[in-house]
Length: 78
Image (cartoon, rainbow, N blue to C red; front, side, top):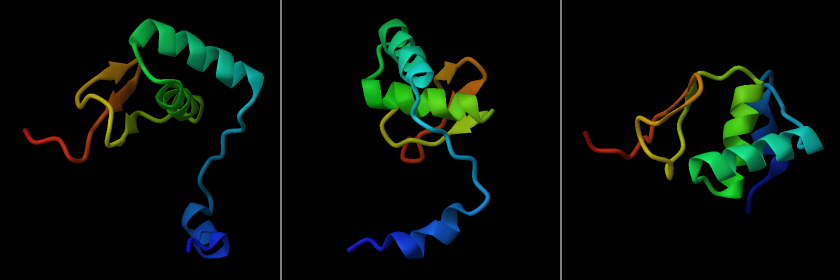
C-alpha cells in the first residue's frame, strides 16, 4: 500500500498547482482545441502554470508541442 508520508519528501520543494476553476476552464479549452482527454489537459495546463518546458507522460504523443511545453514519452521508440 502506498504511504503518503513516505512519498512527501519526493515532492519537497516542487511546485504545487491547485485545481481552481480557472485551471479547469483553461484545460477544457485545451481539451477541445487539441483533442486531449480532460485529465491530460489538466496535467498539461498545470505544467504550463508552473512554467515547465518539458512533460514526460507515458500516454501522450511523443514530440508534440503545446505552446512552450514539449511532450516526451519515455517509452517511445525512435
